[in-house]
Amino acid sequence: MSSSTPATRPGSPDGAQASSRGGFSRWVQRATSGSSWTVYALLVVVFVAILVMNPSFGEPMSIMAFLKKAAPLVVLAIGQYFVIVSGEFDLSVGSLVGAQVVIAAKFIDGDESMTWPVIGLMVLFGLGVGLVNGLIVTLLKVPSFITTLGMMLVLYGAIRLWTGGAPTGSLTEGFRQWGRGGLPDSPGQFQVPYAVLITVVLGVVAVVLMRRPFGRTLVATGDNDVAAAFSGASVWWVRTRAFLFSGFMATVAGILIGGYAGVTAQVGEGLEFMAITAVVLGGVVLGGGRGSVVAAMAGALTLEALFTLFNQLSLPSTIRPAVQGVIIIAAVAYAAMPRRSKAAPTSTPSPPTTPAGVHEPTVPKEPQPAAP
Image 1 (cartoon, rainbow, N blue to C red):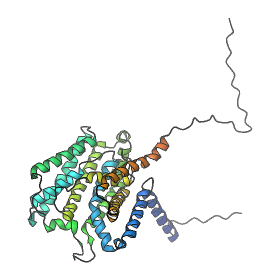
Image 2 (tube, rainbow, N blue to C red):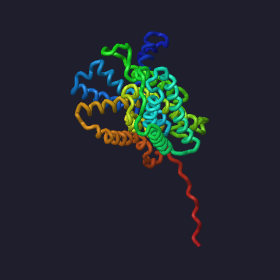
Image 3 (cartoon, rainbow, N blue to C red):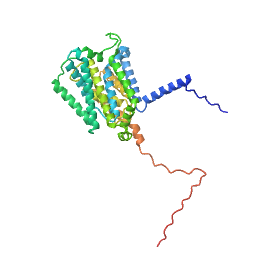
Image 4 (cartoon, rainbow, N blue to C red):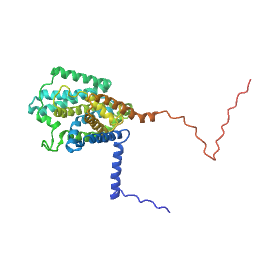
């Protein structure tokens, strides 16, 4: 008589441990599923390479300085993830970041009492740009690539027309603290930057949203918007909200960049392509329907770490666009491989064989007509 393993009771400590281990393993499996595991491996490899060349990079203060610098790109990647996973693009975020910094400097102009009203104005402006992008794409059926490219040019030209090509004004310390301050507020000592705390909070909110019905509908819309519409989803409103999130994230990134780097004429340039590169590096499929927001954030950290490694190697900054282009092509090609293999035509199935010992019934032939 064979012995069987006793079943674990759900309420027992062993059952709780098994459930906890199972939940953790499922989370790891989801986080590293598909092609997104490569970004975590690449992040580790790049960090090891930086540490080999500069061991002081592993010190807590150096790590926090790196995360503070990477925070705006991570925030932009979160917003870009919402748009890309829904099957669209947002090329206007770089110009929107630049516009937000210029707006802040112009209206605050060193007046501390104007800091929070202007931040509120920036949030409304960012949401307004996202709303316009979303409605043009969803209601007027203009492709998102064309819509956001046009918005990028509109913002770029309008800001330079308004400022004459040279941003004026200044940012207050109350504004800049979010990009360069931290806790505890003791310069020269170890700090957890506000930028890192804000990024973590926004990342948690994004993860929670993607686990809610909105997130599942967003992914379903990116995978097949026709099927999502037939299932009762409001496709136009889901995608419009994705653009709203992108506009809001660009506003937060503008606040962080303004505090960290100040006001310059080049602020925000190229950030849209860096955000797209970070998202596809995280395994998110261009065209929508697949991808993890955590992996998109890891892609932003990996890209920033890669540029840090280039600085350690004394490579020119002009190599960055070429690297971004290679990453986008390679990531898209790699992410598309599973779909190509699944969509590949299968061989013609062989006719079913008759099991042994079973006689196949004989089908009588139709009588042939007699020859005339």
